[in-house]
Length: 98
Image (cartoon, rainbow, N blue to C red):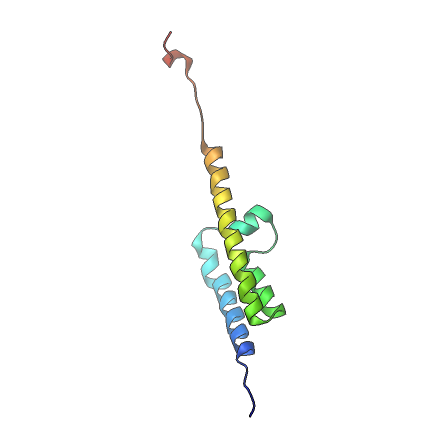
């Protein structure tokens, strides 16, 4: 009895889905991958496409989960940096009690 593997089909469908996301959704969402903005290199979608083409499906999924966790942390870091950059302390001497 032959065993049929659905892994090649699943990987092709995942890569095609990411490509469609990159082409049709990502340009209109209004923000960029936090991991790429903070660390440089590939966006998460490009990173996952590369994993899918180079690794077994279950390995690519595990690596993707770690990458998305790192991206969430990068997002928090960028938000923290932005909050600190937006903070302004203005002292107006004429308003201080004498």
